[in-house]
Image 1 (cartoon, rainbow, N blue to C red):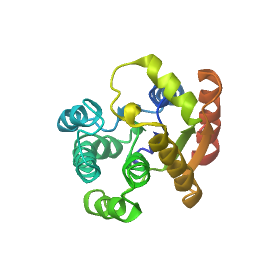
Image 2: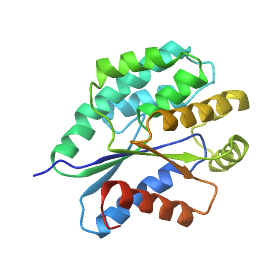
Image 3: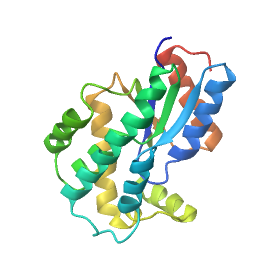
Image 4: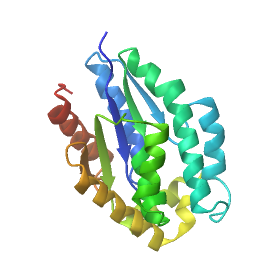
Length: 210
């Protein structure tokens, strides 16, 4: 049995990543592929416990280095218990956020820089990378407005527009650095329009008829 593919959806707050993750899973299933949705931080029992520490509470709850370590601890648990075994079964895994979020939020947003994030990536993840990363891009003000309407977990949403502009700029830099893996998707349209753009990208990059 061949391994499945690993697709990640990235971007700032309010871009519709969760909605589009499930829509993509549905499209893949309709053409007969096995596909599962997951998320970060989270996606496994231990990682979900760490998620609560990261996304709830006051914005200054953790310093940037502690946040970085918590994210990679959750990521390691998620990979070992969920992502890698699922891929080995030949199932596609569609993930709402992955390591590019850590680079954007902690590396660029909090100013830790690329080196610290890359070092922890090598230690905890190794050479493994997504087959395709879809970065849902949206102006900061529009994204925060959308995020405020959904409510719920909002620690990162309350970190201020300057922080969110830095992380948006970080995502754009990530896409520029790795054009073979990353594709920018305009998240400003309707959910249907964004889903169609994602499907077209997956069809073009991974050669599946969705």
